[in-house]
Each structure stands twice: as structure tokens, then as C-alpha cells.
Amino acid sequence: MKQLFACFVFVVALFCGSLSAFAQQEPLRVPVDAQALKVLTASGEKSFALEIADTDQKRSAGLMYRTDLPADRAMIFVFGEERQVMMWMANTPLPLDMLFVRKDGSIARVAGNTKPFSEDIVSSGEPVAYVIEVNAGIAAKLGIKAGDKVRHRIICGQCQ
Image (tube, rainbow, N blue to C red; front, side, top):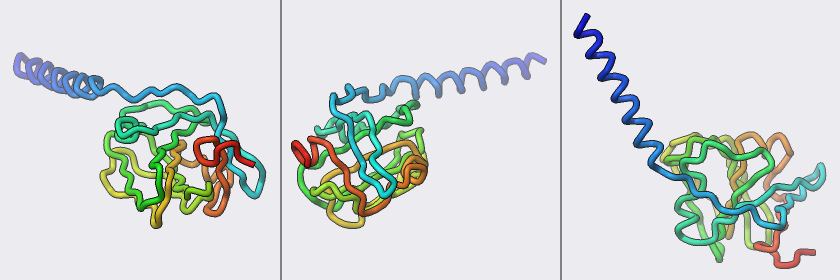
């Protein structure tokens, strides 16, 4: 009985230690921008409250360690120039859709339902200037597809 109890205590300690190590990693929290992000789809305009990752530090952290992202929220990664972009889901517990966006605001590719914690590379497939992440399934649910246009001051200044 003593051995069983000792084993139980060991397992609980190990589990708590794992949770503690995970909890030590603080997720990035950036303020929501005053302007909403608009995606122009075949079925109409879709809006998202937007978090902007426009520095190396913010792009590196992204949505890592985040366990919450409201359905009407997106994070945009701003690269400043068009280039081949490689993303991954390491340390990211939320499944996401990734919208790879060209400098002109057109969506080049949608990578849907990316796998949490995966270190597999998710490639833009062509040069892009932005990546927008939303909760997994949102792109399909809202009919967001390659070729749709994205509008926000970060992408097109005042936008027309």
C-alpha cells in the first residue's frame, strides 16, 4: 500500500511539474487594433478584430501558448516585403487557419486546420507579405478562399 501511495505521489508531482513548466511560458498579448480587418468574399464582407504582430519578437511569439482566441479575432503577421514564408505550430495549442496574403491584399493560399504543437512547416507556396491566423474552420465556415481580398490600413493604407 505504501508503494502504491508513493507511486501515486510521484505521478502527481510529475504531472504538476509538467503543468508548471507549461504555465511558465507566457503567451503574447497584443492590443486589438482600432480598425477591423475586412475580408471580401463571394458571400460578402467578413470582419475580424485584429491583433498585429509587426516586430520580430511579436512574429516569433505569435499565438504560441495561447489557449483562447475569440471567433471574431485574427492575428496578422507583417513581414514588410513579399517573400516565401514558412510557418509552424510549435507550442501553439489552438488549431488555426492560416491565410497567406500578397502585398496587394489578395489571398494567395488558405492552409486550413493546422495541427496544434506541430513542427511541420506550413508554406505560403509563393511570396507573400502577410499571414493572418484565425481559429481553425473559420475560413471554410465564412467561405474565405484564395483570391479573396483583405483590407486593413496595415495592408493598403486608407484602402478603397
